[in-house]
Image 1 (cartoon, helix red, strand yellow):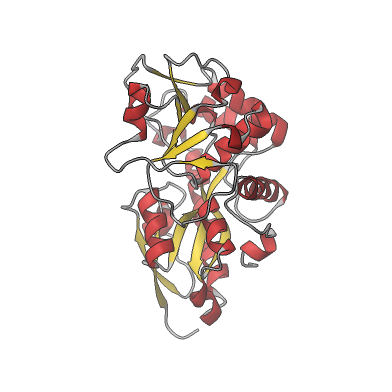
Image 2: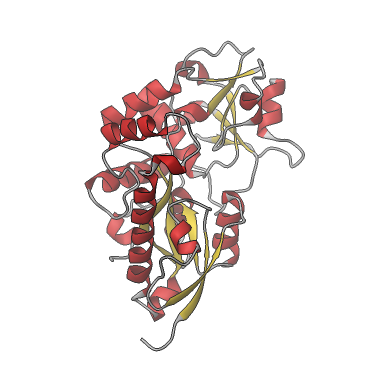
Amino acid sequence: MPGKIALSLACGDYEIVRPLKEGLVEAEGIELTILTGQDSNTRHWRFLRNREYDVAELSCSSYAVARDQGLPFTAIPVFLHRRFRHGFIYINTGKGITKPADLIGRKIGLKQFQSTAIVWMRGILEHEYGVPHGSVEWYPELDESVEFEPPPGVTIKRLPHDKSVVSMLVLGELDAALHPELIRPIRDHDPRVARLFADYRREEESYYRKTGIFPIMHLLGIRQELVDTHPWIPRALTLAFDQAREIAMRRMREAALVPLVFYGEALEEQQQMFGPDPWEYGLGARNRHNIDTLIDYSQEQGQTRKRRSLEELFVAV
């Protein structure tokens, strides 16, 4: 393999990427320029709309929509971001919402309709709590990473550019919001806003015990022409990311390195519930079930037309 190929990689600044970023791990045959300064929405937009990076951490649901529309991207099963989502469903406390069924018929704000976090939350509300996604009016704040035609029976109304989901929730202009991040009114203990699930951790643990799903948010997208020209790139990247993750997981076991009281106990608790590596990559049984569920939700919610298999969505590595 003559020389190294220079590739740009945009991703979050995660501990499981740190060995790659610091040069402790290298992808064979590749000179990576790693960019970690973008927020998720900006990174996804710039990759899918403008092709600004060669490789990028990417919203799973936006990737599914891009592939459904024939855009020239592929992916490898490297999942840099996972998060339970029950704790990110917010309500205005003056609206009389005390349980999931109270969301039916309401106005609910979003960052994007297409966001993976939001797809998970809508799917969980529908299948675990009986709140059909078509029974709600959806108000996204941002344009979608990949535009799509909303299906019949689903009401999506883009907010004006001078409005934000969070401010409208606080003021009662929206009844509830699904948001990918912890919003400021919750951090500030604003009495006008609360979580739908006060004991959200109990709900998340119950969900995991029932389904075995620790929701995957992001995969690693690659421009298709790179793979067509250099078919060895996906495997080289997968091996490097896998090695970086293993180093990070070993480092996590050194409790003295982490300025967190009772860190060792928290790590033991995690291992008891999830096993030694809840961040595993690849398409083993647990990850297949995870991604298959998300793809089902995406199609059910009208974002994709064709149900693609994981073998169609991921490069074999």
